[in-house]
Length: 286
Image (cartoon, one colour):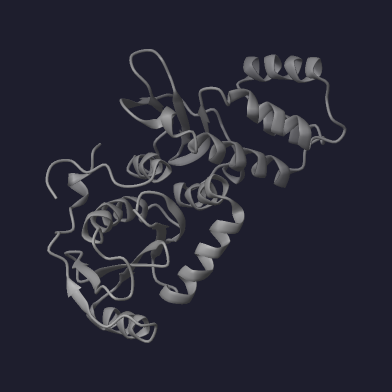
């Protein structure tokens, strides 16, 4: 594996770039050539406020309006939007303050809209840049860590039933370890379980790129498990089974041995160190 690594799954790539920003980063991660913007992730103090893709920006307004009780007219919402722009106030939080939108409904709308936007893969490729600006004062209760948004985005993009099935398989096979399940080629993230902080996405992106190449000739339990050392005493182990690509991070060799024993009880017969090296985070495309 040579050169810069993109890694699998568009949402994972975008959100790993958010995770790589400073903890207090405030601004917009903008995708698109020149002055055009095909996708934008608004960030405040390192947390995602929302993501928007070309063609879906009206979608958030529609979701907010549908969640209000009583439901405002289009003219009322437009007037509130202009008022909020003058005050530099998020429109969703204004609706909550007026008592017509429940806080949980606002959070759900923001999360769902951002996940839908991240599934528009064509909007998140190519050049990107971070544009810093002053905080607008988004309430932290209505913002998201990148890992939370990634988990939800997988369910939205792939379908809740597929995501639940993948998550169930993952927890059964990996226990409480950091882990992920992709489609058979290893390019589409179906489910993941990662620490609830700002530390897991870039590592998963690296491991996902490694697995897609390392497991290319591993169709199922008849093929060996592949593993690679992470350079810090831990081990990534990957395998393919029943149309899925699995990745599990073991904290040390003892934990790795325990994971391998679990998998051997399910029919795998051996584990071999991959000839494909695990790339470093520095190898990720910026």
